Length: 463
Ligand SMILES: Nc1ncnc2c1ncn2[C@@H]1O[C@H](COP(=O)(O)OP(=O)(O)OP(=O)(O)O)[C@@H](O)[C@H]1O
Ligand SMILES: [Mg+2]
Image (cartoon, rainbow, N blue to C red; front, side, top):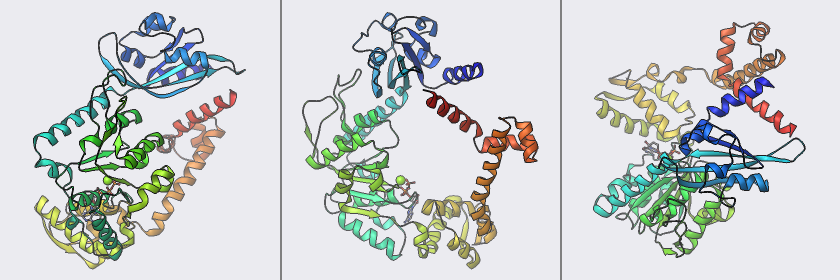
């Protein structure tokens, strides 16, 4: 128990997230260093005191901690912008959870706060920069936005050509487009090509990766905000407005939370949007193109999925169009020869066979990296098997066996560790391997994390 307590203390005090816990009367029972830094205070100024005594700007109605300690209902992912006592503006995303005792009675509440000031500042700077770029130099629009054209997409295979033909056709109308494909299959290339083929080619092309920002920020960045919509919010157009007349590319759309997906669908259907906190709607004329590597039917709300599925383009993985490999090799050889200053002419038949046998999980990007890597070992002539990266030389059986072996090994090690209750010397005796080897493997298989998860599960069961 004491050990458990000490562990908790170490973990909580080193957390990158601010942690603040109060009992039902509002007295602070725990307050870590990160929370103190965010608030511009010392832990000692807060511990043992009532929340409203330390934060006089709050009251019973506005303090999320007091609210949750009173109602027992969690408040999840709430965005907050406030100026701390040192005058520093802090943006955070907070989750406040009730704490219940063994018998189910409410004991208090804990708030976990993630400081997103840095991300937020960067995101806003990017918006401002984009806005300046678009307003100052209309000619630069095309260049800074979409660089690629259909002619840059290499490949003669039927499966690829068919997708490209449909893409080129779709480019001429304004329907939303959904591009799906594994990583490295050229989704970005295709999306930019569609924009450059469309009537909107001289208008903005703006891309946003939906996985890059927390939900509340993504909302404000896409749709804009008005002063006062949340504390610290400025009048700012969102990317939708910046892309007006052009194309907005939402990459990794599968990472967009469902609530925001609903808002996106509304904008798609009405052609109107409302900035965060605004009362009036604004008309926008934006073509939406989305991309993802996940299965869209699983990742998207059904209504949004059906709206986007009208023009769905699925880029085939490289292993299903191996006929394109020689052409792509030539293309990348040209590129890297001139970049590195080598004069490699091509690939020997044996090496070509090995390239054709490889499953290419990283697709075209992986092939591009592979060719670049070969040029480290050869400056002229033809690429030979020996120039190919190491994993090409493992036998297929070995490749198939490796994950299976790892699983078995992990299993045996964890069993031994459980049997010896975490004693590495005893476990290494049982397994017949040196202790250092065991420790290395424990790190590899993340034994430590599994332990913490188990502990948490046990605790939850105890509640
Ligand atoms: N058909 C192609 N012809 C030439 N280059 C290609 C082709 N497809 C992809 N590439 C190149 O491969 C790399 C990866 O492509 P891209 O960034 O478009 O992939 P992606 O599908 O968006 O991948 P991710 O899901 O990882 O973002 C880029 O350097 C791109 O130029
Ligand atoms: Mg991409």
